[in-house]
Amino acid sequence: MAPLCRERNTSLATAQTGRNTARLDRGHDPPDPGRLPEDRPVTPTEIKTIRTGFALLAAHPDELAAEFYARLFALDPSLTHLFRADLKAQGRKLTAALALVVNSLDRLDGILGQIQMLGLRHRDYGVEPAHYAIVGAALIDTLEARLGPAFTDEARTAWATAYGILAEAMLTAPDMRDAA
Image 1 (cartoon, helix red, strand yellow):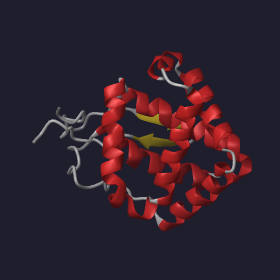
Image 2 (cartoon, helix red, strand yellow; image 1 turned 90 degrees about the vertical axis):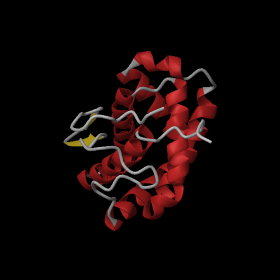
Image 3 (tube, rainbow, N blue to C red; image 1 turned 180 degrees about the horizontal axis):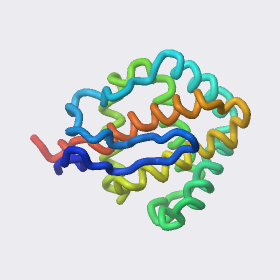
């Protein structure tokens, strides 16, 4: 299967995240399958901001996941069909994936294969490119609600940047499962 982002200068989706916009397709050729998108890396200051916020959220992973899915389905009720399994179990997977990414922000190349496989699995489940914008908006809304005043403009930018990198890597994952 070819990468989803084949055409130059096309916009797969844009997530409106308050005052900032997280671009999920940066209007260029798909990245090298062995490298993460380099449009704008997450800075050390942003990594610290994300990790500080996530530490506050990680104490209550079930509540974080429940609020995320409530916001996601409020934004787009049609997405409920993608979640056939127990949402509590799915929520644990979500928070585990977030923890992996947050803890690996300074070395994302080391988990690129896992990110790409996650993207392929989501493709297999029926996730479409436009869904990434909705997920991004639900994530940012959830973070803002859960973190309150700690979710500053800088935190919003940091999380939107990190999510954009992750989403682009998932969207452009080459399907090499059948190649051999």
